[in-house]
Length: 400
Ligand code: HEM
Image 1 (cartoon, rainbow, N blue to C red):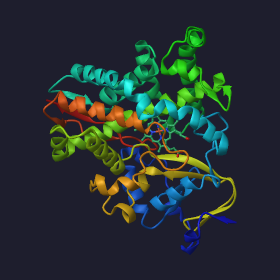
Image 2: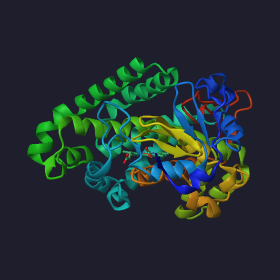
Image 3: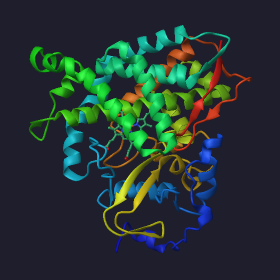
Image 4: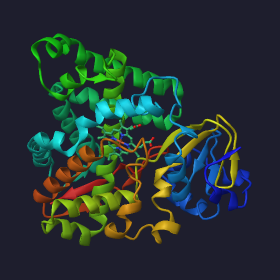
């Protein structure tokens, strides 16, 4: 038996009672999943959901599992996921080849384009009537900004928007064959982008992010077609949804916390906006969890897991752990930044952090610059997203 750390063994081994199982359709009725994990977490660091997965709820346990990557493998799927589903030195080689696309310096040339995308979108939104911050702001902005970054044609927008919606619906349904079909339809969409540019990328030296990715080498050999499609799926497919959900959370927070909205309207430095955005997302992290599988028997949080156990690192719950943050709803960016887990921790920590931070900062700045107030629509209450998606399904706001 390997133990992640001796401190785990000091904890009493907690039995997992049936009542502590986490149903996965919890928020189908619009319930906020955070309230449920807030209730469970003080009593149980580890619970089991109806799929038989072990869900880590406490900050300490999520961090320990994320850092113990030899014991908690990311190779959870039989499909190729570059770099998400890969471990060890092979994973490091992919990250070295791919992270260079996502550094602040690599993203600097896109600032103006992202600002133009955000300003045009905000200018097109109606004033004085309800606008949905998720579908009309978050999804549209995420799709347009990502297309601008990757050099993809603007006429793909509606297909990508449709894909984000279907992906959410499939994820919520828990129907694996539907989820697989949706992933395959995304791969077809990506192939339709790559095919016509294949000769251009290799022969005329076209120089945008997609073309450069097509010329990228890992461990001294070019990426295969399957790897390129997988990287693009992970860069866009998963993250269009995350940025859109995050924008929904941010707009809801600003609409319900006028003092924070006023503070941001007063023209604070970029670093302060970024810190406030990270802290709002810590309080309501819509990127709920990632999966792992144990490579040998492990004891974590006093619970013995066999080899091959399926584990979920619940970032949303860990980011609200009262043992670390006190009252999880109190906004304290400076104090909480060092333990914020919105972008994960360890070898698999999010390489897209700077891109996400930049896009969200620009979206919020442009939204505030073009309005004098953002308020919730009293006629249409905001609706929580259904598990396992976090954040809000819709946030009707009125812009003035
Ligand atoms: C606000 C938006 C985002 C959030 C909250 C977020 C969050 C996360 C988290 C928590 C992880 C850790 C996964 C794990 O440990 O298994 C992760 C990984 C990852 N993220 Fe993000 N992410 C966001 C945006 C992005 C963007 C814009 C990109 C790329 C364009 C991106 C690409 C990735 C990739 C490729 C991984 C896997 C890294 C690996 O396994 O080594 N993310 N993200």
